[in-house]
Length: 175
Image (cartoon, rainbow, N blue to C red; front, side, top):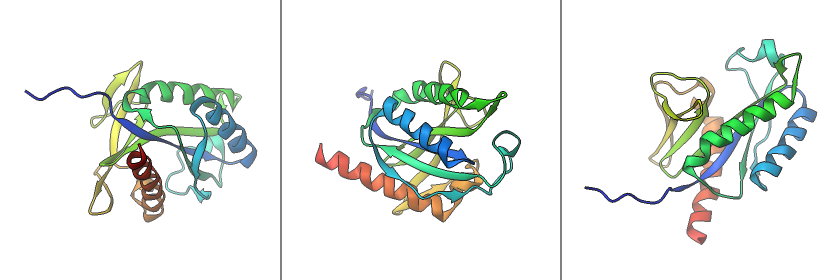
């Protein structure tokens, strides 16, 4: 029988899809109040892999990733998704979001995303929130899985997530 270990700490990151930089900046401030200081922010990336958000947020969408200095217990992901959903509602207009906020975490072997939608490859966490392993870390980079979103399959995202993983790895070494 294996021994049960304490909850691992992981690196919280959030992907944000938006049209207006002002909404992004306001959201980032709220996220920092909730989760602490940001230690990484990507450049804005054109979000062109799907038109899923266009009816709600608009066209010519951008995406940025941020990560937070404070490491979190992996089992906090469901509560974080609940908080980010409330922030999305705060920045809604006429029942339409102005920003999409997707939390996840990086551990050394993988990237995990939170979702309020069930699917065959997602595991229920609690309070209506599911988790999915989106990427695996193998041979010094990330590798997608058959269900990985198209944007998370790109070299641009791999580069960003590798940068966040390197920050995380340094944090683990210094603890």
